[in-house]
Image 1: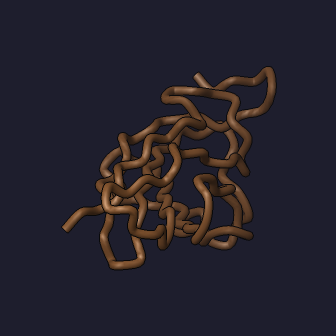
Image 2 (image 1 turned 135 degrees about the vertical axis):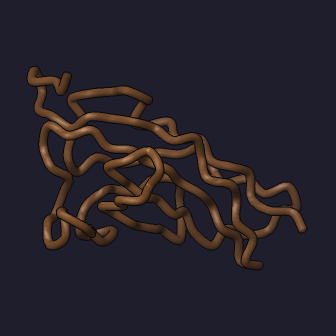
Amino acid sequence: MAVPDTPTITHPENLQVDIRRDLTIICSEYNHPASVEMDSLIVHVAKDVGFSDIVWYGYTESGNSLQISSAYGTFYSDLAGKSRLDRFQWYYIRAKYTDIDGGQSNWSTVINFGTGEKGCPLY
């Protein structure tokens, strides 16, 4: 059974700093080799590269972007109840597409980014 192509995260870039805490994740456009319609884009944000400490989960049923905020997903772990990511932290992000037949792409390459404020990068 054919599944959606694996997305590529185009924003943020790997190891990018000064990222807004309510950033919008942008992925490559949905593509399916058998032209099966998209069901969702799923995004996880974690504090560790193995994704054992997921702090945000969100999905959208259309498009290739998703804002990391309480309006578009759910915060977990030590971010439960918050509306955006913490300042001056490193996070890991991954994404995958699903199709209406239940097929799932592989997870994207993991991207590592740091939150901060303009002019105040995380090192």
